[in-house]
Amino acid sequence: MPARILLVEDNEMNRDMLSRRLTRRGYAVDVAVDGQEGLDRAREGMPDLLLLDMDLPVLDGWEVARRLKGDPSTAKIPIIALTAHAMVGDRDHALEAGCDDYDTKPVELKRLLAKIEALLAGAPG
Image (tube, rainbow, N blue to C red; front, side, top):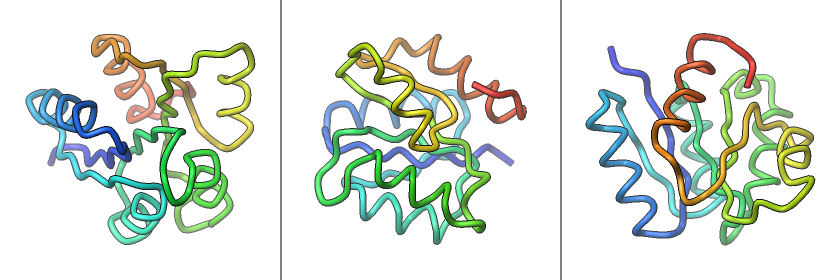
């Protein structure tokens, strides 16, 4: 059974590109377009991993990560933060919010896949 990834991304081009590429790699991909929808879908669907844009409408990715990691029923879902703002301290900020790993946009698929595979195998990011 393929690993289930929830992609929470508000940018349509990024969402379409990533979901197609991950699907071609054998993952089952669900998408959400804002933070609240991502939070709801994560709680309902219990994905194997979350790819979470940090700059989202309605509820930002930082808050989504905090809420998921603060809820015992979703705390174990691995989260990879995705952001175009590769500022000093952003990785630490993402990890403090509860994300298990961090990656920058534009996404380099090979690097992101390595992080996904490591987290799905149970290795820390």
